Length: 329
Image (cartoon, rainbow, N blue to C red):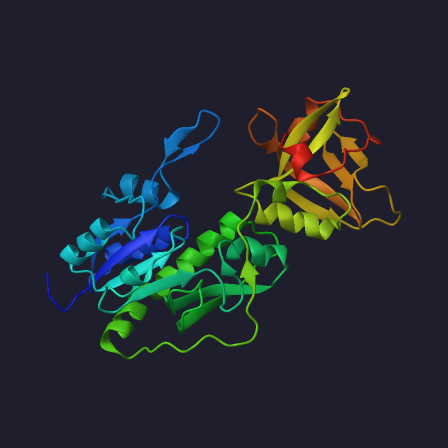
């Protein structure tokens, strides 16, 4: 291949990396010399090892190999990148911190594709956080990596509107496509010196903390609009979950789709207002939550109407207090 092609190595684990790696693979003016992802992790009830979404796609759809280093900062992996002649390292939702020795290794540095408009939502979960906060706009930032947490200077950004009903998986996929549309041009401009990074603004920085399992506990004292955003933000994990009183016992449900409803008269938060074969509605601190799709404990995802056709749920019953410790016991 021509020596003028930029030699790129790609590190990613999340779904956002799928459209990006496809774009890198099909860009004839770049040379993708390697792909790395996080090691396989236990998943599901049987705790079987499973690849990351990015690794699964690359292995099954692109029929390419994926390296899965326990740490990309090891001397062996650094030497491996040197042997490959990597000139630019591209990172998108990878999951490991890159130390200075790695950041300084490639000729053109390390390019991070971050799923927010920096300096807003630095950190581990920017896509979930932008939904939780009810923002109407987000995007991807192409950033030159430094030792800080998403603090490096910005090359450029691409913006998009957030659809009011889309969940975190749908938004991540759209942001991946948005980034993929620009990644090749950004790399070429970095390499030829026509795109120089600018420092991030000193004002307006926020942090998107890592999500915990207990964050998914449904607090019915919150407004229905906030709970509906949590359903969307936690769609992939941990889901918004609650305990539903069924025939004298409590059964856990994971709520996968829901919509807020205005109420003319206030009801005690957590009260089941409607439980017909077509609708399941729970009172909240403000308004009510209409549950559209859910996963009952030990079963597959289904519509609320399917669930209610086979389950006796009584109107007027109250859901127990929603605390993360209680719901995850």
